[in-house]
Length: 162
Image 1 (cartoon, helix red, strand yellow):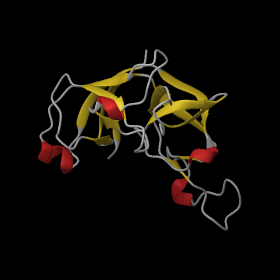
Image 2 (cartoon, one colour; image 1 turned 90 degrees about the vertical axis):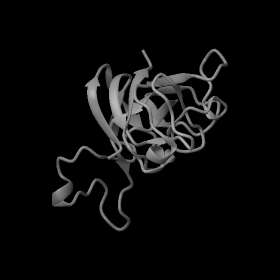
Image 3 (cartoon, helix red, strand yellow; image 1 turned 45 degrees about the vertical axis):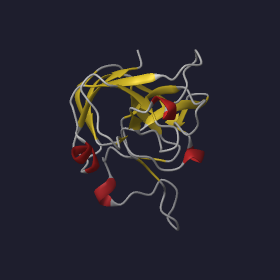
């Protein structure tokens, strides 16, 4: 499990996944990479814009464009370049984080710019906002010990994009 909405707030369905950015997990923090295109935060200067609500997968090689197996029809995952849903506020449980020393309730969380948009509490690893400062994208609502974080226990977060 990577992302579970508990109290979703503002949703944005007007963006497409940037097909040049590759596959990405639900829960990744994304930035605007072009006109109505989003990609996972991948550099310090990528201004975080929202949290990806869907997993984005690559098209399997050797199959026709937009081909889906019967079991994939109606699934919530998207393909490279497809329209995607973003969360810009709300409360979520996620395992899409990098917390080598755990975290405490109330900790500010940033978009780690070299891990595919995972959450981190290390400000120096966070993406920079439009004001030139590290952008806090979420607040931790529960405490995770180092062992719990290493085991991938759910982290409850409140998004701060709007």
